[in-house]
Length: 458
Ligand SMILES: Cc1ncc(COP(=O)(O)O)c(C=O)c1O
Image (cartoon, rainbow, N blue to C red):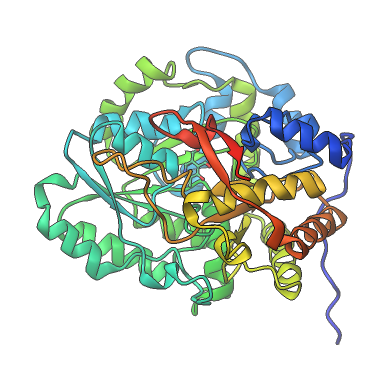
C-alpha cells in the first residue's frame, strides 16, 4: 500500500506579522549595523535564521504551563515539575536550573576547571570554548578527520577520534579534568554523534577515571539521527535512545533554548552528589537559588512540557525533514553546503561559494551580508570571525571552513519561507563573481563575532 505523506504534527494557532523591506532599505540597514548581522534589529529581518536558540514556537500546552507555573524563590512547584521530567528522561538525579546554556557551563566549569587544564572534545561550541579559555585552560578538538571534509557523507561527523582522545589524555593525564561531548555538534555542522562513539568516549573516560560531560543542547535531534542512521536502533523509541545516551555521561550542560523548545533557560544535570554540592555554591553566586537558577517558574514549567514534546518522533521527523529538504533544494541549485545535512541548520561553504575571496577577507561574513541584502534572510558566520584569535599569539585562527549557518527555528517557518531562502542564495550565487570581501574595523578581545564591525572592501 502506498505510504501516506507526512506533514507537521501540529497546526498554526497564532501568527506574527513580518515585514519585507526593500532592497535599498536592507542595504542601508546592514551598513548601519557595521555589516554585522547581530547588530540588525529583528524587525528588519524577513526570515531570521540567525539561530535556532530561543526562537522556537511554543505549543498550546507550553503556554498553558506558563499560565499555571508558579513563581517562587525556594521550593517552586514548577522547579519540581521540570526536575521530575529531567530525571525521568536523563536518569540523572541532581538538577540545577540556569538562565541559559552558557550559564550552565559557567557554573559547572567553575567547579571543574583550573588554569592550564586541557579539555578535549568534539569541536567545542563557542561559548564552551570561551568559558574554557576565560579560565586560561585549553580546548582540544578531537573530532574525526572526516568532519573536515565537506563532501564526506559520514553519517556521524560529530564523532570523536578515540585514538586522538586517548593520546591527548595520556600525554596530559593530570591536566584533563573532563571531556566534553557535544550532541549534536553545532560548530562542526550540526552533525550527530553515534551511540557507538558515545560509548567509546565513555569507555575511554572511565579507563582514565575522567568525568564525561555532555553538552546536550540538541540531544533529541542526536537521538533521532541514531534511530534513523545507526544499525540496531531502528525499533527503539527516542526516549529509550536518550536514556542510553545519557547512561554513558556523568554530567551535562543544557541550553534549553534548543531542544527544550523554550525561549530562555538551561540546566545542569549530574550523577555526583559531591559535584552537585560544588556547583550549588557557584549557582547561588552567579545564577540564583537552587530552585530557580535564573529562570522564572513559568519558564521551568514550559520547559517540562517542551522536553516531553521534543522526544516525539513525529515532531523530530518533521523538524529534521524541513532542514533536510532545504539542504536538498540548495544542493540541486548548485550551492556548496556541508554534507550530509545536520539536524538544525544548513552550513553553506563560503570559500567554495566565493573562491575569489581569501579567508582573511571573510567570505562567510560577506555571504551573510549579501544574502540579507538580497532576500532579507539572516544567517550567521561560523568561520574566521567566530574562531577568534589565538589567546597566546593573538594571530587570527584560520578554521578549515568558512561557513554561513542558516539555523532553522523549531515550528516557526513554512516551506514557502524556505523557498525564499533558496531563491536568495541562488540570486547571490548568480552574481557571486562581482561580490567583494570585508575587513574588520572593531573587535572585542574575546568572542568578537557578537559585536565586531566591518567595512566593505573596494
Ligand atoms: C552546542 C551548544 N552549547 C552551548 C550553547 C550555549 O547556549 P546558550 O546560548 O543558551 O547560552 C549553544 C548555543 O547555541 C550551543 O549550540
